[in-house]
Image (cartoon, rainbow, N blue to C red; front, side, top):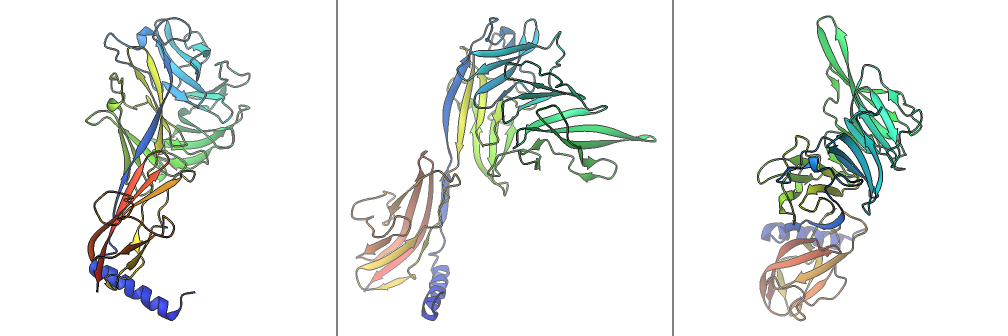
Length: 401
């Protein structure tokens, strides 16, 4: 409960801040990511290698699509070997777990594939779905048919199953209408009741859905658990992965060609050599002279910097002028990250000077003493434990009388 005198002071402070510009604060955030090389898969025809038919003399890679998925412990790659396309599965240490030749087997080259929570692999092609283990062995009774349908996408659910988007057609006199369905594929090979998500005859539903979050929400872009979406482009200066917040504001852009050791890929329509996970990490599998390198990028969200002045502005009074600042509204989107607050109270962009930037109180709600007149900027720098930084500032006006 705010007393009458305090509420009047608060209203006065807000009005003064608006009049003198003290409440206006500038925010800048620098996105960071950490990289980790998972493994290098050498070129060659031996077991566990990637076929030399997978690249050319210039080490351009022409992958089929989708050509790789990864679940933090197993990577499955669709490899174009000399004796026909195949799947190979590798552990995170590079050892081969299994291999499946498409030609001569009952499993066709997949339209899409995804891991379940337990590590089983679901493949889809036209009207058939297949379930395999990490050694790429087809499980018994795992070939599921959806008659007169075409599998579009397979995504992991959040309770040990898969979401499958498939389409079919309705024929009416001289017209053909597209129908899209969402169905849940269980690990025992059973299918739940399909849900119609788009009816081309009525135009109702979601025609552009290409991705399903683990909790079953339809998306037209890959979306992580924080609501950030990812979009892959082939625009200049090359292949990029862009990250957007829930308001569709771009918060991160990654240029793959800037990676050390990058060797150009031939452009693919889907950009499927980017592997984006539900958790918000993304991976690349890129061709180098040594082989195909699997890299993990931890997309660390920078802190959100919020700052305003508690003490009414402008201040006119005796020395020292005790000016209180409030940055308690600052936070990090990653709840496990820790924030470091560094202050610059004299506007010289040098943070934490022993005298000029000294304060009392907690680092997110400090009070700084001014003994001389000062009209200018106060800066706050936030740094998380991954090194990502954000900045914000306010303007103070101190007149010592």
